[in-house]
Image (cartoon, rainbow, N blue to C red; front, side, top):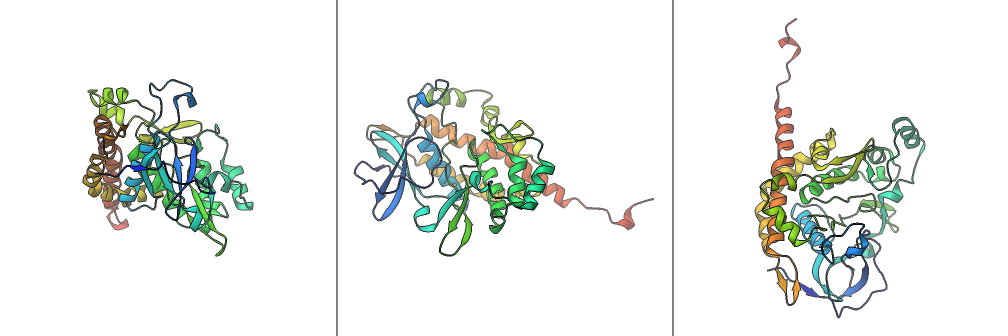
Length: 328
């Protein structure tokens, strides 16, 4: 069974974290000699429409989503689930303390050179809505941005995140939720560990809503019907449209990750099963929500990611006729 920690007596640190996204309030705490960030769930009043619940399950989603990233071998921040100030929270180890300053992608986009500026002027005719990620613009930055180019792993990490975010139904990988680490001493850039996975697994849905979904005869369609944080030419991309996006680097990411995901699905199921339903008086993860998370992961892999993998493999294996074989 997974441990649920009591963070009530953890001392405040002198850091409130130099990362962690925008999901709810945060505390900087000490656990032993390490710096951690406590992330609290957002309350219902933080949203425009009623959720039917007092708090989101974003701490649980952060914890589960981050562990799935780790199981798939992608660098991710360390997390622990627990209780603080009478709420279920997630603690995230502050990787910036020892590894460098975080430069979020939204700030990196301010860096430009002549080549990037010219390319943006020529190819970008739509500036976006501001609350979504303009995919075409981001891809140009990954290719031409003078700072991002110093980190050759940035492109593959981005597409790895696209695939895994679709797997865990993370709908908010905005440009503030990933970036690079700058090491002042060595003057080097590296891709930051993945962080801010709290908008996964329908974290704003109540247990009542979750129970309704898992008993719906069309639940497979509900599992794969979500949208992503990305838009192209003013159109928000669904998860299905995103995984089918025509980009060679995405196809390579699908090829890399699909066999790993397939192999790790039993481990993911075992991990989710090990999350306690309760810890003392605290509701951690209902039986229905655990069923929803696992069915969602399996369905999104089987219905979206794996078919693209098979299609790409089939295209690779097609025999291209040689010139001598072409009849004139």
